[in-house]
Image 1 (cartoon, rainbow, N blue to C red):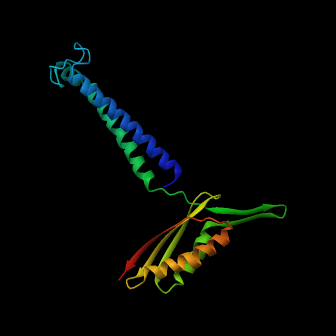
Image 2: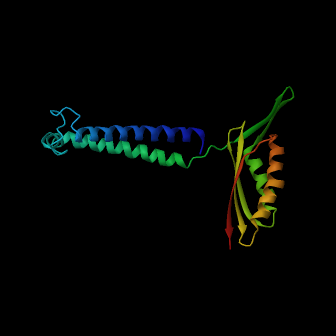
Image 3: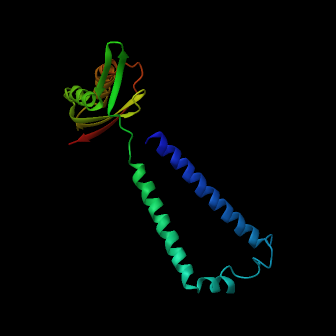
Length: 184
């Protein structure tokens, strides 16, 4: 999940929380009789004559339907954004008077995938570079045999594949997350 998605989640949850807090506070204030009694009498049921009269108008239900559609579209957008990952397409390694050295993220991902699958414990692997071109991160998905030792896979990643990738990207820090699935 990228930074914009996390920021959007925090903002959206804060707004929903604020709205629910205000509505809950209004309900408590009404039940305690703290609101003007000519506007929201505490002794009457919530769905009283004026509320029923309001919803007996045909346009009120159209407004409710429009609000529901807007809410559904916002919820669908939020759901689709959750799966989005910020992948890096290319990385600029060096810029100078001699030119620019740029590599594609797919090329680096294919190289690390080939290096990981060279381990006898790994059946298949995929890799993605995420983050930003200035601070890349690697996401690995490995499928290993059921009898594979996780320690062996970890040693191969930490001792061979990730250091080679760090060297290729010319960076001292390369956060990596590996998801290992065992297959029988």
